[in-house]
Length: 288
Image (cartoon, rainbow, N blue to C red; front, side, top):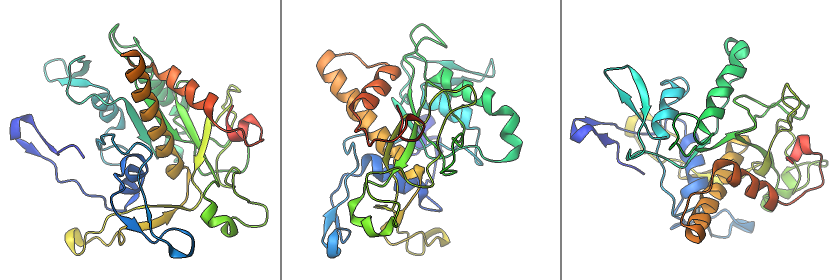
């Protein structure tokens, strides 16, 4: 984790996870996997490493706590100009992330009329050169939503430039939990499907999100929170999204190692889609 201290020591952020959701999804990406837990078949001990265990996590406040747009701009490397009152692109900022993993979406009625406009903002942040000729864009992964199994149920933000992730049932430990019509290596019944309003196919890819083991906080009596005892089983496209974000980190790392240059967000998305396993479902369910 990046230390919650900034402005030359004049500010400090005390960060904790009140409901364990953020810790769980962060662990899916970057857990170092140093401790074993009884999560295997018949309670066997297994490590729980993230998909990209050498990656660095930065937490930002978003929905309900702060402006998610300002938070995303800051994570993309923009700095706030107190004179102009605007965020401005800073190529040399020390807080620019390569990827955002967003296990949330807008489902409340007050956002309905603004879904399109809000999605465009995230599409712009994923587009190289949109704000400035030197702006590299940022890979943005979003959970597709848990409003399935019907079609056209994908949850905003959603746009072709984003990687929207649905949930699969690929955790074989829980074969018996999926039900008669819900075997492993299928799309989870709750996972939202496409298309978008204008016909664009979503989701873009699936990842395990049905009954995942993962890490949750253990605070003891701190903050008056009882968020779990270190591990838990969660389900949702929220659990699938960070796995794809971890894959994106591996793609970026491999591309930079080979080419000494960063892969553009659309290239990362294309690589992930073209190397995913086809599970035999239509493109509006499993991705395309």
